[in-house]
Length: 268
Image 1 (cartoon, helix red, strand yellow):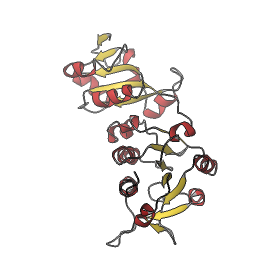
Image 2 (cartoon, helix red, strand yellow; image 1 turned 45 degrees about the vertical axis):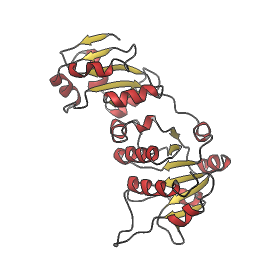
Image 3 (cartoon, helix red, strand yellow; image 1 turned 90 degrees about the horizontal axis):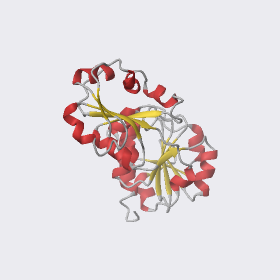
């Protein structure tokens, strides 16, 4: 593990941390596939355990020992706290950042092979909600997460942070557009359950009590919910009964409620 101490925030070796936004990191041509940023030694360790490779690690001196085992042969740039703050625009309280090689996204069929419960996130734009949904998926027994083409990036640094690194624990990939996605999931044996407000929707507890063997739980964007095409693709529309004049939950909260119900019916 090469250790390089740097005091100048303009040093070209720090370009991945200074010059590029999350979107730009994803689009860089070298390395192929782009990069993403992982924050904290714990999250970096989870990424490495999932087979992701760091291109470099940025750390302050007092946290150097925390990254020794996860950096591999990637260079470790040790910087003073003020340099870290100048690079990122905020105090780096979690001790370490890593510029990670973005892995290729696997095929949907490979991700859902053997799965009995998967979460489908359609067009969710808030990275915090994406990260929270992944955390719910990991904690409550979902086997995989599938995201729509326009869903926010699970490897965006806020998504990774909010998920507590579970974006590296739960297998995931991107779906194609509807109705192609419906065909792939049906071929894999999944019953598509859309969580939505709709006339004739089945209450969640009733659906969970007689749930199909393999379920793809579909959750939609903040505000608008699932698209018309997603609802048309669904086999069943499911709703969470509400009280107090409230008609819906935050999508991440809804994912937790629905997953708990679906994994506590004696089947999972």
